[in-house]
Length: 393
Image: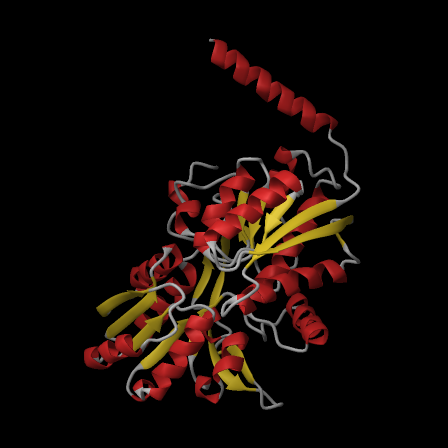
């Protein structure tokens, strides 16, 4: 009875606090990302695109001036955890965002959500948080860890590839990726290999691929891992007999710039493309290239949309960001012009959206670009496999 009374009083206090909360004069956002080392380009894409959205909004989100606190997790979960703790407890940020890799986010996330600070993820979206570990203070603005890979598995099935060789780093997102591919692939998986996270030499693994002779090779190797893998795959001549299919970020602008013309013809699956025909995307691509003198990647598109989600939600509560219940409702029902087109959050706070097949080509300026292979999605209005395990409704 005593514990029930205490819970009742606490709930009443929280309700009263929300009722008297006032619009803030400034919103402080903590952004933790991988900004150095071989994978630093990924974090830079997210940071630059997020900053671009803020700049295009006149330095505000939802009509409230923005202060950014930015930290480099150095591709290290412990560093990421320390940055989360510092930003939440010392810097008193209102929202957190930015992390690239799932292992780093899972290390730092409790520091935010335990203090009731919303984390809006521009990339990392591991499967447990879509299901049994879903959290009212976590929203994924990107895609469930499995989704690109589910679309790739569906594409491989549609193309009729009868045998596949799968490879990913040995961490949560890697395991999710290959589980996603297998969920929609109807052919035979001849082998499934997990490499060291951050590995850059794949000579031993490629010898095994050659011996296995699959019809299609699917590899989830983000950042510098993917650049090295593709170079070595092509140098070994494996592209002559084995079709290489990648997740969207594995063949995107940052990878193409690092690999070169051997990328031509490689296909991948993603929720966004440079040439998606909607006004928000056209503006984003134009403004990003103008600001940074390079074409954006899927990571940049996600970073930009993350800022737009915050903009819409903060505007919806009229700057009253300390009302946590109102903020959560605003996020869940968010409406904004996404660069990817149609977008909505499912009940587990993960996206429902389209996934497309893309192909690396050359544009009129001779640049390697990743464009839609078809305007028809491989998967339309696709959610995730874990939503029924989430208790939030």
